Image (cartoon, one colour):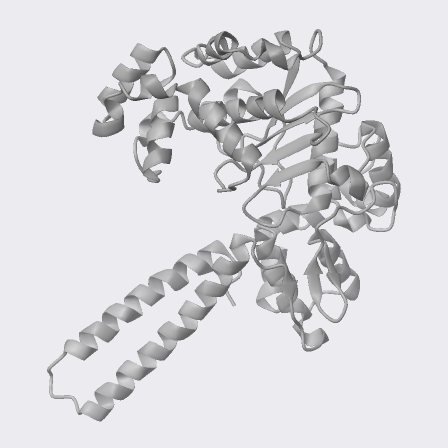
Length: 419
């Protein structure tokens, strides 16, 4: 079984290598007996078939389409845990961070199929992956109750401790894990968040894999706490989001401190911009939400430290605030913006962001959309009054080729604005 990206890439390379060898053997004319040649070819083709099956399984798990894992007995539990981790979109490093052990320990566990793991550790990992195991294992699609100590391991306690989520706790990470049954409910009470099933139905989640619901709950609660600590002056009125207002926001993009200026611009309009890295198992780019105290928030994880991603995600979340959040239907919307969705609200937000950054009539006049050269992008950016990364990002997105214009997308230019 393929368990990580390194093995996946190696398997893909081996498939191509074996196929080349098969083609070479088939075309060879070196006097080898046909039966021997056939046996050599069959051996290589068998290896290709096995690798193709493993690669296909890994890709299916990564896609998020798989939620059920059949087992013939308890001996299948190790493979279920590995498959569930991949289906959650969690790397071995993510799972290690989630339960407070080194990535290398997870690698050892999986390499030996958890033979050295205790029953307590197996239970802890199953909770971290948020699966229910009966006659079969199934990914849970609703978060555990935040006001209960029933499943403290379902939350990434070690990572939450590391990031300072537990404000009044002065112990170690190990002590935090032992006291998770008290710390987790207290944390959610501080955020004043209701993570009941009914409340969950007022959330929309756009992500490429099966999101770990407890980690998502913790991240949203943290966003709420940070927004309430430093709320914007005044309240947000969606009527303020006019063409002129959007132009004012986008016009900040060429500035060296454009992301910080954008945060100030939003604050002046009643919106808190919160930067908080995503937690393991979530793979979020951003979110739009309204806290229980009524603060409207754009939250960004900066998972991709690029200016093109920052500006598109920012405008995408602004679209959700202007069009969707705060209505009776949605209280929070979470996004992994590079994942195709097809839902009406995500299509609306994508189009909104695209038009706000570069209106269609102006995009038609851009020479760079055809030439795709750095010089043309810089000329068009100056003409439109936007950062070159915005144009480069749109070209890459429309071409579905993210190798283009790498020098213009502002890699490494966002996080330095938010130390």
